[in-house]
Amino acid sequence: MTLFTRHKYRQYLFGLLLTATCFFQHCNTQLAGGTSTTDNPKIVGTIIGDDHQVAPNTQVILLPENFNPLHDNTDIVIDTTDNHGRYELPVSHHGVFNIQAMHLVKKTRLLIQGITIPAGEDSIKIADAALNTTGFIKVELPDSINRTYGYLYIPGTTIIKSLAGTGTHVLLDSVPAANLPSVCYETKDISEPTVLRYNIEVLSGDTTIESMPFWKYSHRISFNTTSSGAAINGNVLNFPVLIRLSSSNFHFGEAQQHGEDIRFTKSDNRALPYEIERWNGTVQQAEIWVKIDTVHGNDSTQSIIMYWGNPNISASTNSMPVFDSSDGFKGVWHLSETSGSVAVDASNNSFSGTYNGGLPQNESCPSGICQKVTKPDSDYVDMGDVLNPGIKNISMGIWVKRASLGTQQALISKTIGNGPSATYGFLFSIDLLNFPHFYLISGGSQWGDNGAFDVSGNLTVTDSSEWHYLFVSIDRSDNNNCKLYVDGIERTGTIRGDISSVTDVVNTCHLRVGTEYDNNYSFRGSLAEPNIAFVTRSADWVKLSFMNQKDKDALLKW
Image 1 (cartoon, rainbow, N blue to C red):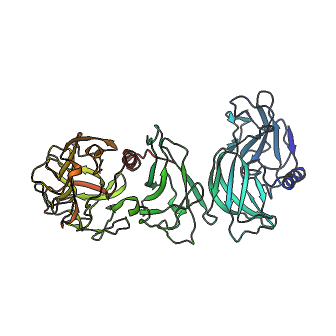
Image 2: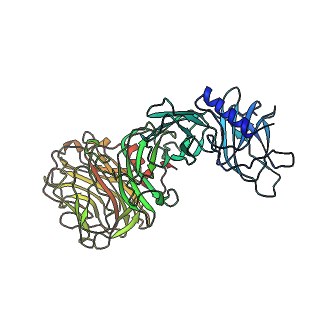
């Protein structure tokens, strides 16, 4: 057992700084000075190696929770594990401590934080802890940093690095895999540190890039597309991921009033486009859409980083690159407006609609806020004469919660209805038998004629208490490539007509949500997130949309 005095510790610490610019130790609260005795409380435990066996020859160090490796004059305690991987650390003061450990041969490490010894306790046994491969933190330095006399360090650890001779970035290596409270900047003659980043998750063997030096807070948001998460097998490209914030996963008081300082990056530091659909600090709820170039299938290691906590930055939210027409999007309407008459199109086509009747009339939905239709025929959204698909493929989806059954109800339409004709257009609806049903027609006079195509689902939607995500994807090369989905699962049923016989689909009807152009077959209930794309969407795309946007998100891991 070794007890470092104040003088010896400072010699030890700065000796390491001369030979290696980054080294390893612990965290936080301050230990009182003095010498430990056998009457003092003890912290005992066992270290396990990365081979799952006990780890002898491992250096174990006890530090106060708020330990400052640059200025702290407090004694520390060091032990080396015995042949059974056991250590014993006497404590001269009740408080909160951290333990860090390093295998002296393999250099694997660990960090245990927040160990409390309550008054009156003689000892505390720590659960077995496992050593792991270390990670790295790459920190972008603000221009205001003094690189000649400054140091970067992790409070509560002995991880510290001189900035002399560094450039715009500095790399902290040999960092134990852990959630670290902060990274700080300080100089020898300044006693008050500057926090460059709070809440940093370091992964074993990985490099964490902290690229926003004036943002105080960051959080890694992980994706899980394995069978325990969204269960997506293939990669999904250019996908808008929905991120929902609430008091359970976010401290709204740390961000600007309207989320102006929110930013997102990939793990490699590249900025990600995002749209704040809603930010309500009063009720502590927000919905944000972030465009991910590739969501990897059957993977639980992918992640992005969210930053906030910069009072001096302006908002950069922009829906257009998130729902870009180059990715097939032609119209995306969140229907989350609470006042006014405009239903904004989030795509870069700006096909905004007009609320009619008693709309907007809001209700909560899986994706946040939606519109509740209580007066069919008068409550609907009209986008004007836009989005004739012509000869293009087409996909569309919408969230619905029905309030009445047994009648045909238009969801998304550009048609005056009636029978097939050259100007019929398209209709996505729930039919008389409560099946989802899609029609795409450029001619014919009877159902099934050349030019008249329709596909219905094989699963009815008959409840009025649950939300359902309905989606259709039409590939005009072959009937077999036309799919209809309910809640992310393919439910293609009866098909009439030949999709390859459908030619130019054009008319002058207005595109509407909630009714047809002549106000027939109007919907009663609640509608959310209607969207139209002139591309086909894969089964993985549709399922990922449902799994991410449903009430209990299966994609994101906080």
